[in-house]
Length: 316
Length: 316
Image 1 (cartoon, rainbow over the protein chains, first blue to last red):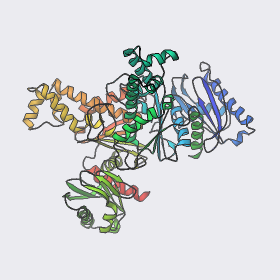
Image 2 (cartoon, one colour):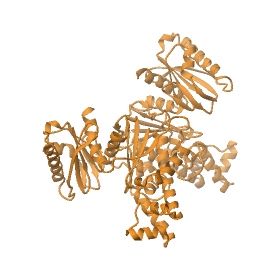
Image 3 (tube, rainbow over the protein chains, first blue to last red):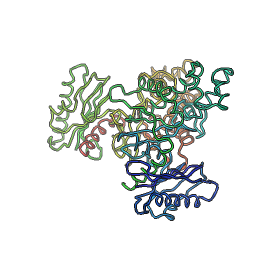
Image 4 (spheres, each protein chain N blue to C red):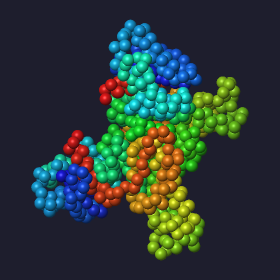
């Protein structure tokens, strides 16, 4: 049994997770990220102890703790090198948690944890597996032979910051034209806004008005109602995403590319055109092809993935 | 000792290569690719036997033969699934060569061989190493933990067919906007032609006239002579290449990205602006950074890499 902790800007979510990546019990507390980080880490330990006690277990029943953290992580030393969302810099997270609870601690980036969690549940033992998450940004992670691919410095797998349009729109990362600028949920909302600006009395405008806001669903809903403007937004967005995915496929040839995040809930309205484009334009014409599937885990990916980081950490 | 064979559309080049990737002796014959493939393979065996005899060795002194082939390879079965340059389809290359010479035979794509050869000589034992070759197309290969990264189907590492400009110029692969369309030597020559069209009596036009053709060197030579048009071509080309390289860096975070092919001979005139852009825009701001270096092997990469494919094959 492992403990997986998903350290977010709002909540600390933790779970008891078995060898196969099933959550046995979970719980959460507020992060309250403005306070000293040591206090946050003490709460992570207390939450872990509570989970163990609530399940009627002892600390010795747990093999290791894994933590998924935002930011740049040194997975070798357990240091949070830099995080933006929860202000931390050169913080020895793993060592600190061990001061409060006597267990091996392993740590990885939250996007990598999500990829590993999704792989554990949805990866069918793939040699190469990629998760692409469509959220505020485009996150992701690459799992090779069951382990997160880190590159030489721990910072690999930033799929959202591969270029989609050289010289295109500015990204928050400082580069121009990143996949994230065109294929994130944020980008879809912006593309929908622009389309509404050109058709201010159209179907999308009415949907947004009824819902009180423009969301990642607005264009999909309009398309379902037969609106050509909505359809155009969806197809352009799908093209951006598909072009990013075909690049990932040409580079990695993974068995599976799983796509998660809120936008993925659009289902076949999104996956249909994406698959069509990828199958038509992928470089590999002669060997078995990558499957493009919807990610299944949602919010639990972080906890499960963190636990799998612990499992892999113990195993190395 | 290994034999590495670089099977090209014009020549079959082969070499005796030691464990460290040094060529002890090499030789070549014409491919004559229009003849039956079995005859080509017999010549590959004869050339191998000649190398062994010329060096005063016996077949039993050789541990294995590696072959680098163009096209789509099934590295598990030794089959050439499809090749365009030398017409072959579903050809059991490894089995056929073994009919003529009794040694283990391993086979990989020629671009992957080049990457593995470059890694053996220039890779400094990197955990992650990428070769990008600027030629007719943009080739490349990814070496992880000393082995070619193949994905699940053998077809991974097509770095030249990652998108650089979504919806951009048509690529020979069928997709639009591939890195290859903007950053190959062919693309540079086209970009130079376009610039000469706008400045038909300028420095580049005169250089091309004196040399009898427009080459990948024309713009670099003009820039050296102080020509602003030449400089503009070089900087735009460097930007395309750099944008592709920064994507590779954000995805793989390799210790080293080696850049080869004729264009790389431009040296610092190319590598200077490329490194500046990559260092400024790379996502990783806090961890050790990828080194971008010139590939060192040139044409020998194919022979050495094929021999290293044999070495890794024996070792697996």
